[in-house]
Amino acid sequence: MYLNQIRNFSIIAHIDHGKSTLADRLLEYTGTLDKRIMRAQVLDDMELEREHGVTIKAHPIRLTYQARDGKTYMLNLIDTPGHVDFTYEVSRSLAATEGVILIVDASQGVEAQTLAHLHLARSQGKVIIPVLNKIDLPAADIEAVKKQLEDNLGFSAEECIPASAKEGTGTEDILEAVIRRIPPPQGDPDAPLKALIFDSWFDSYQGAVIYLRGMDGIIKAGDRIQLMSSGKDYQVSEVGVFRLSLVKTEALKAGEVGYCLAGIKNIADTKIGDTITHYQRPAKVPLPGYKEAKPMVFCGLYPINPRDYEGLSEAIKKLHLNDTSWTYAPESSNALGFGYRCGFLGLFHSEIIQERLEREYDLELIATPPSVPYRITHTDGKIVEVENPSNFPDPSKISVMEEPFIKATIILPQEYLGGVMRLTQNRRGIQKDMEYLDATRVVLTYELPLNEIVRDFYDRLKSVSRGYASFDYEHIGYRVTKLVKMDILIAAEAVDALSSIMPKEKAYFQGRDLALKLKEVIPRQQFAVAIQAAIGAKVIARETIPALRKNVTAKCYGGDITRKRKLLEKQKAGKKRLKQVGRIAIPQEAFRAILSID
Image 1 (tube, rainbow, N blue to C red):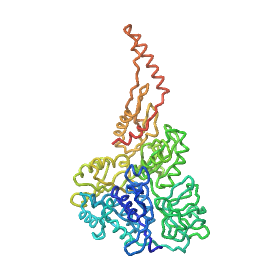
Image 2: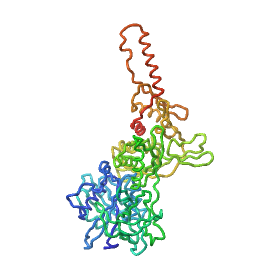
Image 3: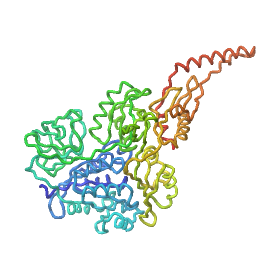
């Protein structure tokens, strides 16, 4: 069995259109897993994936299938995420394959991420097999969805495969289509070794576990390999393939997908997109690799217990090996101590990374409110990107301020059109296009400031559309705007972790709302606490948390009023002294409060 009998493919789709369920049926049909150990979404092995109901990491697995032509084929499947924040994960998986199965829900039709993933696969020249899933549902409208695929995506009705991943209908037809339509991999086993690193993770005992796709040559245990980006060399201790676990093999040849262990303990040495070659017989030119992902949402991560800082540092380095699409750099805060400033592809991506750090490495973390990178041109012509409000320059030194914009695609039923349009206009959206997919569904195209969607836009969109709208976006560059830095002062002390950069016209309203919200979540003290929102030296909003008071006059039954006044004055003086030395403990809810401001 070699190249002509190998197929490498991915499954792509919108969230909840049945990617992981179809992967289950493929595993079941090919006998890859025993039915006794089979469970729903078996490839989603992270607890977070099962809780959120979404695939977060791409999962490779090898299937063996005897086709109708009597030949036995080796199928390397990579199940991919569907959420917009994990598009980079999808692009990495596509680079290791020759074709994809595109799943469309027969009851919901084409959605926003369907279009996004389709364009990504076509841009990489992949063969696409359209599958209509969930045809067993009463609401399924197969003919209408086929027409959508014909009119909007350019497929013919004949090439669309009807299937039900839940019931197993159409599974054999999908496997046969993979063999017939997706070409076998190209590669020369006698050429110098070239293998693409498309993923990796860190094992405490064995070091870095590298996921690779062989392009040329052969790699086996005992080989001396070289990582072409760094030039470092290592001895291969084991190679193998993916079943539900790692299965050791003698070698991996060109065209195959598998893993490699080489005792790599330095986490920074394994770079996603790097090329592996032989040390004695190296390839002359590395593989193109991946375009670097550009983080667009930034927030600070700090340990609640300062003694956990070293543990956080180690955890971040190990997790970054598994997901290189986010960035990190050390920073410190007057309020929170030492931590890291991290950049993510989106808000959901940041939530997942924080949860993984907390669960997988037993940490308790505080996350500061999210911000986006702004481009600032100084009066001397110097251009800088500012993602941390504490680095916002003096307004007198700023010539031009720019904020990032996105092109948003929203697909929704016509009946919710008015509410969604009001929502986007309130978020400074500019409508660019509106077209009908069919008689009941509309595609809206808007240009929106990224800052307006990183907080609660997706939640509010789902609320306005009762869950029926789908949303996808791409970055389209920077545009000139007027920005201000708003500081939050608690008991006359600026809390740098609560500072934010925002459009000037929204500063007053957000400052007022945030002060009110903080008044609710910060516990009362023995003294009155002032909460102020300020732009420079100008206070634009203020709230006061009243002091916890003790009735010191309760023991006075009658008598001269001066006795009561004396006790009250004594209490007042004590409160004043306490206010001078008191410190406010800011709970995590205070940082989350910013997220709930509309």
